[in-house]
Image (tube, rainbow over all chains, first blue to last red; front, side, top):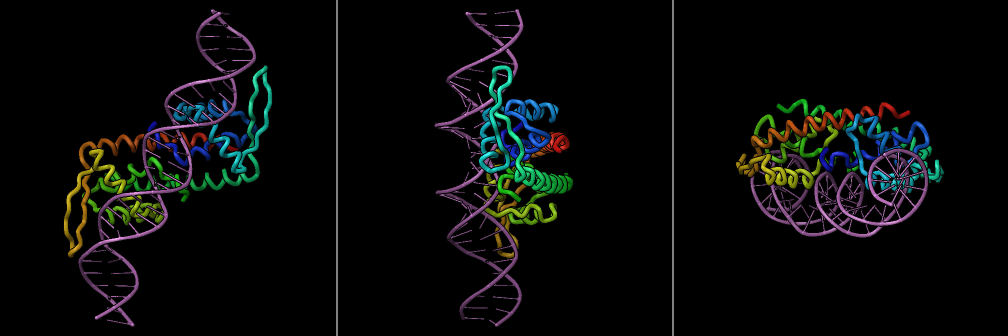
Length: 107
Length: 107
DNA sequence: TGTTGACACCTAGTGATACTAGGCATAGAG
DNA sequence: CTCTATGCCTAGTATCACTAGGTGTCAACA
């Protein structure tokens, strides 16, 4: 996938992946890959800073946990995160719909 | 629409709008607005540099023309531009499909 | 006649952000 | 004891849409 394709849509993806329940960063990467049918295979340097950004924005909350000797930072959706998810999902639908309209006209 | 939403997809839109036939920059803006149902209402500072970029990349060709005393730079799709349009359209479909898959999983 | 708005083009600078390329640490398998 | 998978992190870079200005023509209207 081209480099800029994802820009502006990563936040929505992350909120959507965390929405069903608490998830840690590494699992977000795997779930994104799985759920997208291997289309979204994103590097850690993309995911971790984005999760931090979403937490700073108040859309995610995190706490440390330990599993088999490995520490994880587990993220949950806040109420504001839920609202952001809904809003960004709607925005995505509008955007994707408009894209299809324009593409339909192209010969 | 949020600021980064379009990023990485503008080139596809422009190629799609120019594809049906020679078009000048200002008309691209209007056609994009019309065809998208007013979703894409893009400033000149977005369109003109992007058209120049696509011409430098060899996807568009331009020539000056004059209409009622006003000069226009009219763009046409090159063969490479046609290929790029097809490739980017396919990429868009893959991207949009993957987005839908991930969003479907979100509660 | 002067001004306003639509048409039509341009570009230097800014801000946002996905990614590269490194780093650190634990556990289990070979 | 080395390698792979798991799990986290960040400084720096490149890209690109957009802001905010600029130039000029033409028609309508006050």
